[in-house]
Length: 185
View 1: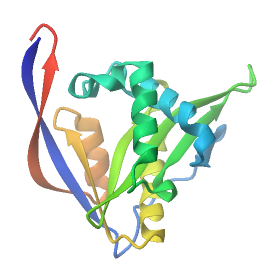
View 2 (view 1 turned 30 degrees about the vertical axis):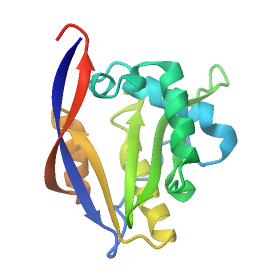
View 3 (view 1 turned 120 degrees about the vertical axis):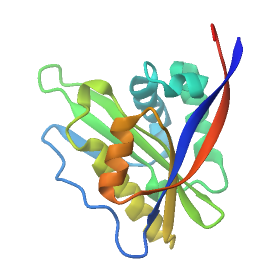
C-alpha cells in the first residue's frame, strides 16, 4: 500500500437566492424522500454509482457493498443529518417489474452549512438529468431547515461532475487534498 493524495475542490452554492433549477423527472423514475427503511436502498445506489469510479480509491468504503451500507448508516445517525436533503432515485423496469435504486444524495448540516454527501448516479442511468434533480431536491431540503449555504467536495479528475456543479451555479472556493492508502501505488 502507498499513500496517495487526491486533489479535490470544495465548491459552494448560495441558497439565499434559490435552489438550482432541475429538469422534469424522466418517465420510469421516481424520487423517494428519506426514511430509515431505505438505508439499504441508498447503500445499493451508492455502491452501483461509485464502485468503479476514482472515488472508490479516495474512499475505499465506496467500492464495497458492506462499506456503502456502513457509510449510509453512519451518515443517517449523525447529529447533523438532514433527512429533508436526502433522496433516493429509483427506476421502475417495466419488463421485469423491479424497482431498482439508481441514485442517491445525502445531506448533513455542518457549522451552519448544508453539506452534500455522496451524490451518485448508477453509470447506466447517467445523462438523464438525475444528478441535477437530486442536487436540486437536496438544496430545497437544506432551505426548508433554514440553511442558506451549501457545499460539496469533488475530486478534480471528475470533470463531468465539476461541469454539472458549475452549470448549476456552484463556485470553486478551495483546493483540498485527501490522503488515501491505495494498493499498488
